[in-house]
Image (tube, rainbow, N blue to C red):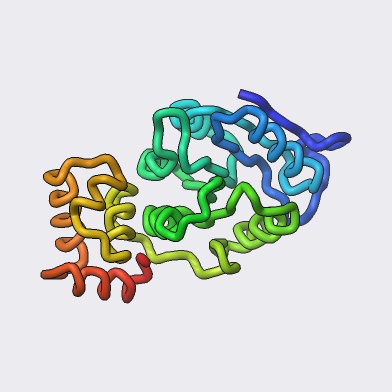
Length: 218
C-alpha cells in the first residue's frame, strides 16, 4: 500500500476548499496508479492518496476506519471484477462514493457501473481537466458519467452481475450472447434474469427494459 501526500502539504494544512481528505485508488497496475496519484496530488485534489492493488486490500483499508471520502476503482483487476467491491462496502458506517476508472469506454460497462451503484465513471484516456471536473462534481454530491455530470442513480436492488446482465439485455442480446459476453452458463443467466424481472415486476424482456429505464437503471 502506498500513500502520496502533496509536496509541502500535510493532512492538517489547508488545501483547496473542495479537496478530498483521502482518496483510495484501487488499481493493480502500479505505473498507472502512481501516475494517477501523482496527478491528483499535483492538482491538490486530495490531501492524501492511498493506492492498493486488490479488492481485499481495499476492503481492509476501509474497515480500518480511515478518512477515505472517495474510492477510485479500476473496473478490471487481476482475476477480479472491480464492481464486486461495491456490495462489500455495505457494512461500513459511512460509504464513500465510488468512481470507476477504466480503459473501457463501452456503453454497457458504463451502464453496469451506474446501475451497480457507482457514483461516476471516468475513462483512463481522459485528460487532466476531465479528472478535475469529475472530482469537483463528486465533491458536490453529483454523479459523473461520460457525456457530463448527471444526477445520482436511485439505489437499486441489483447485484453488479445482474446490472451487467440487464445492460446486455437492454442492448437486445439473447441469452446465449449474454452467456458468451459474461462467461456465464445459461442456467446462471436465467437465474439473474428471473431476479431482475422480480425486482422490476416485469413479465417479459421488453417490459423489463422499459421499467428499468423508467427507474433510471439504464
